[in-house]
Length: 464
Image 1 (cartoon, helix red, strand yellow):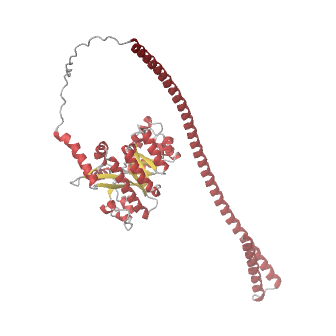
Image 2: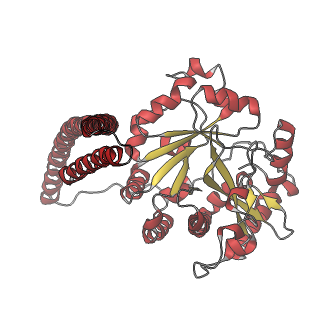
Image 3: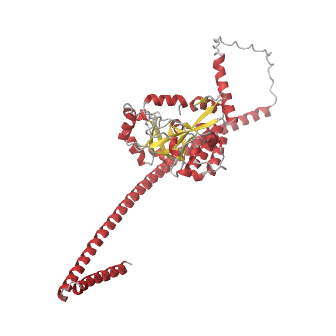
């Protein structure tokens, strides 16, 4: 194709030069020799122009190809490094498994030896009893008269002070409010946006649960989650929150495919086989939303994982779900271990990141934490941002995402958006919060800018 186009251009240049010479000869009255010289000059200029233009275009194409090759090489290097890290992790696990297996075998051998000694003792005891039975009946001494033991005297213990009636009635009243809210579907989902820094473009939403009692008083999650976990109701609450998150996410993705939702999951649900099985079946049925639905756990949950919790977490990761960690209390973080478990986001309070005292208590300076987590594919999200000064300081730490009352407080869904079923495709993302998708998070011009405004917004909706 290139050869044909080159021949066509050459023919056109010859025709243009010949036409110029003919026009000069026939119209301008120039001699044939001079007209030929002008035509050859024009042809030469055209050839030079074509050669220069082709050279410039070839140079641009070569530069583009070199840039693509460089990007491909960099991607290949990252993939090779990732494979090397995974191979090292697998080798470490195999080595630890072998050492653990040898220790277990030694322990089992010791227990078997102890069991053998016990069996020998039992056999000797049986043989002795058989000898006694074969020797004949043994005269037994009369039994001493049995006396009823006197009941032991209880030690004198000071009678505990009974709490007031109101103090004991509050948990029962709160438990009744939680049960009624679950039965009457008065669990509301609030959305708080997470924005990119410094553009402040909405990238994710966190689903925050709120409870309305019979007097329509709003209770934050911290006020009733402990009571729900103690009463075994947290599984139903988590399942309801997952259902609402999936409904919200389907409506948000109608307008923006890049949006995501963070859904909080309790450690009690992860440890309860029945509750987790119900949630796992629901998540399995909605695997199409895996790239946009992030399951969020507390830092204490990951630090106290037992065998059952680890197995359930691995089942979620095997299905492609990503995890986030919140309620971070310190910066003693092992990014490689978290990345292997499927963690892709860590939410750290802005005050904790900017605290100068954390540098002495952690293995890494907070300013280097974002880069360290990024090497393992984990994004750092600074939460509880309440002032512009904190944003400026966080940008020096290369933090990419932010969340807090400075950008927007948690906002409730409209009742029809929260209770609508999946069979209502006509509902648009604007109906979720009574405004457009971008209105779910206040714009930088309208978001509360001062700490005082953030505190007022927090008192209005409660902590997330």
